[in-house]
Amino acid sequence: MPDILSAPLVVEFPFTRSLGPVQSAFLTGLRERTVLGVRTDDGRILVPPVEYDPVTAEEIRELVEVAPTGTVTTWAWNPAPRRGQPLGTPFAWVLVRLDGADTALLHALAAPGPHAVRTGMRVRIRWAAERTGAITDIACFEPYAGGAGEPPAPHDGAFPDPVTGIVTPARLDYRYTPGRAQSAYLEALSERRIVGERCPSCAKVYVPPRGACPTCGVATAEQVEVGPRGTVTTYCVVNIKAAHPAAPDLEVPYVYAHIALDGADLALHARIGGIPYDEVRMGLRVEPVWTEGARHPDHYRPTGEPDADYDAYKELL
Image 1 (cartoon, one colour):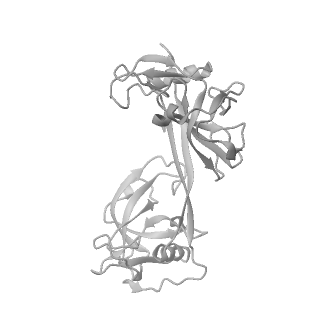
Image 2 (cartoon, one colour):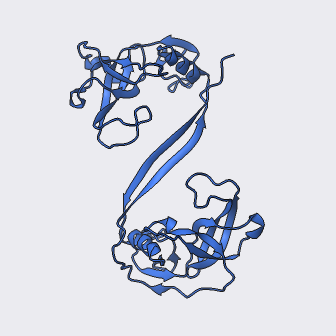
């Protein structure tokens, strides 16, 4: 029986967004140790604030300042904090309705254990020592023995040097274990072969195989070796510098393309090299380039053959 393949994978990218006047005031306020909400037409105060009324969809701009103290409405204990979470020691995720607000804010509560957390407990904000205009300016919540804070007060949202945009790193760590079909595909790649599987119903060959035909829904088992040459069906020019998993120092611009391998009925995607990015085109004939010790092609390069006729790949766009 073949070894079960398994590998840790990370999906990570920076999420960049500009801020409207409401979100800008909210995040800038956190930098200044001020919590702002927004008042809806029916008088409710929403914290965190939104730019449109969730009931009427009308734009809302009336900002109010609420207290940095509040009440836990619900919670869940986190015994093993993960990378990037607010605290490095076990803590509680809590929804806190700040005094003066009608909705709850999600954040972390510093507590010695789940026995010290309860719905209805009073808490207050612990501000971060260094604040930049982000939700992390609230380091966490902490238990608080006092009563209700000051009632909400109107606020014009004006601060010096307002925050107008944020960059948030999004990251997902997980372990991937391929099934029978993809394990066979990966094992073949390590031997510098490319295999797919043929559907017993429609006879199409899918690469990479998934163990079932995406069109007919029936299981596939017949292996078919395809390529290694193929045809570029569509492509894009990458102009944004980002870490490429196989080539972290790759310079932009470069081309990523869908490639229909000879004998396959589904295009796979790969990087195109060995040709200026502005000379890549639909119909370009390409072949894989393997590097020493690699388990998969590094990129595809032109073969020097005449371009494929459009009719030969139009069904694979």
